[in-house]
Image (cartoon, rainbow, N blue to C red; front, side):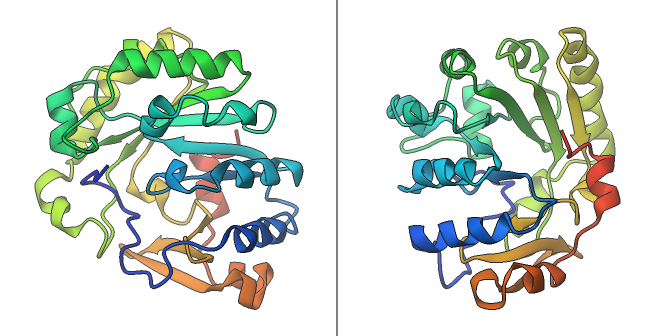
Length: 268
């Protein structure tokens, strides 16, 4: 997929992905920091990495709570992909911005010849993984294209533990071309929240919303080439490679705002 709002395409990186064993070594570094108790795999699209199941199992074996964010397409076309992860994957998050096929194509949420993922497929996936004991979550990015969408009822049907609603985040060299066209105003972001949050909460669904200020410094992220990175002043700032300098030193080189992390309720 080529979502226009994506702020992590990493196209400028010289190394697009690490060897599987190096990725596992980074996980071993992560568990050295006692306050790090969960690891989320995101992208891009993490299910495209052929070693993803092995990494998730390895992270769980190291004592971490594990989660992954996916567009769902690979799970539909390779239905047995995560069957081996019962007991290893704690949470599965779906990236969903709309259930309207035409709108999803405009957003860039399609593969191949404009193939989108219908609501019924997400409903089937969520039911399957709920039965496996894997919790479901939904992430929605709000832009000018989808701020008027009413998604609450359909999202609630997936029985997720959490629905995260994020405002599109502008990041230099990542989504510059789309910012001018689809970056939402404050009112448009709030319009989406007003239209969906209360209704979703009436179904017992936990809803959290994050503006751009909530997303800055409150995530500790690792790039495909094994560095910490964060969004500072609208652009990605990278640490030295974790495997080169050690996790403690690399962590000193990235922005960490604990108060913002707790404000956005990241410790669930």
